[in-house]
Image (tube, rainbow, N blue to C red; front, top):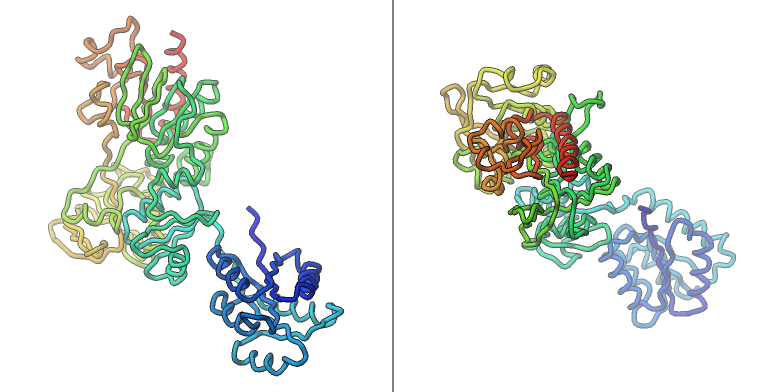
Length: 552
């Protein structure tokens, strides 16, 4: 997106003089600046106020001294309060030079020029060129992407940060309490601290306390299905769901993928995946998810987010999905790739401080705020190891809290080695968190170290303690194991409930649940590998079985 040019504002009540100034300015400076013209002091003041609200860059104001209602010096004094960095030049007749000289001191003018200035090449252009060069040297262009203003410890601010970064939307985070620019912006947009968090979009639109659906709409993400009937609907946009969407769309199926949060699932929060085929230097989970999402959409899949499926029923073989907002979607086949969510850590203070220093999964958006402070990670799996490596770049010390003696049983060897070689990561074996402490945000953790309880200061706590499948809403429709994982294929046939639930002549396909045409893939399926590569493999395999089912 092209950056807007900075502005030069010319003000004079004499139409002929104003036309001459504008002509000369455009001739010399229009390549790098936008030239605006105004024919009175009060109108110029209104223009300046509008430019400030729109957050435009004002480089220079050239104003005539003798104007009715508002003289040049008064206007330029006002301009200084609205745009402190803009250069200010007064145009004077010979008789007003004394006033102009005084104004250089009192109004802190940058220069005055006497009329007429023909030819402009002699004095007019060289003077303005020097002033504009000086302005450019100190000018820092305004960030022209999405800006998020909020409080560091607000759980809603944290949710919005995660949502934006999950869709790879570049944004600038401004902490209202510590950033004067944030306070000015909130005021300029007509809001107060109670309206935060505030999202300012690229076009200048400001939304207070936006829902994820409102943000998605602003970002151009589809929030309503485009068709009456789909061949296949994929529920969940983790690696498995994204693979199913890519293969479904590329093979000509009318494919819809529904995601309740952001693409990538748990893999999407990983700071570095180093064992995924074809990426020898590794890549972040967000990058992998974004590529897969873009690929699915390019091939023709529809992406619906953020939407949650709350119910599924079968009518004459067709599947009807009900979303949280009450709308319904019809499809011939369904692929369940709902993934898993981290189990909650059940100790005092967790509910109160969740999103305010306590995070489930790798909250990459919070890593920079851990600068030179101590953070704690609970869990010994690969996700915990990847998070530890990422956080070690920012935090003073990273402590990994595990109940066992070491990481060998639960973590890949390459990660264990990286952790061993990172001086500011410390493993705390035979230990657990007993309580989290703090008023409005995490300040300390109570740590049981092999029987000895200590209170230690902590800037953040990241929890990775096993996962439960996100299948609560579907367990009454399809057969799950005792932990809630979806049974498919041979595992389903071996279950005692199979005989009463499966009514087709054939056996279920490898990834088919007890309802024909409903398939499961990825981490929520019983017996899944909990590896990105296997999830991608299952998602693509599921589409092969969808074809076989549709052929029936």
